[in-house]
Length: 80
Image 1 (tube, rainbow, N blue to C red):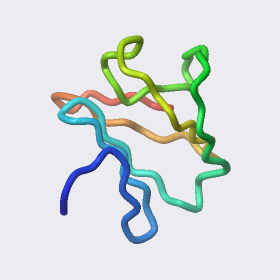
Image 2 (spheres, helix red, strand yellow):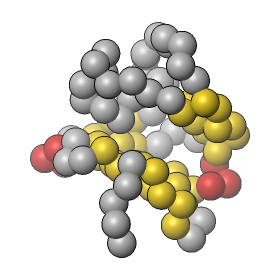
Image 3 (cartoon, rainbow, N blue to C red):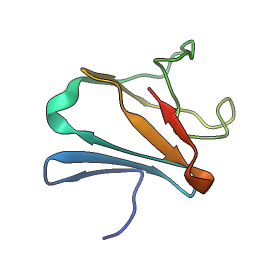
Image 4 (tube, helix red, strand yellow):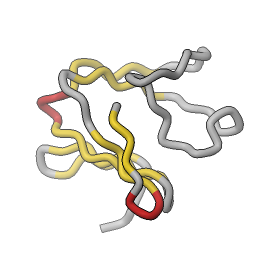
């Protein structure tokens, strides 16, 4: 399977950002998918896959029913 930043595979949404961050979200846990270009405030519930944050622009916001975990470089995790 080729790794693209966003893949829908079976019943999951796979988010992949190079070596730095990965997340697997079941499609039934997604409330809303929204394209966005405006600046948003990041906190414990809002995460960005890119480690470059301010340099790398984002364009999709996912609202989820439950908390999920991103796995980063060396196995570090973040809950969002």
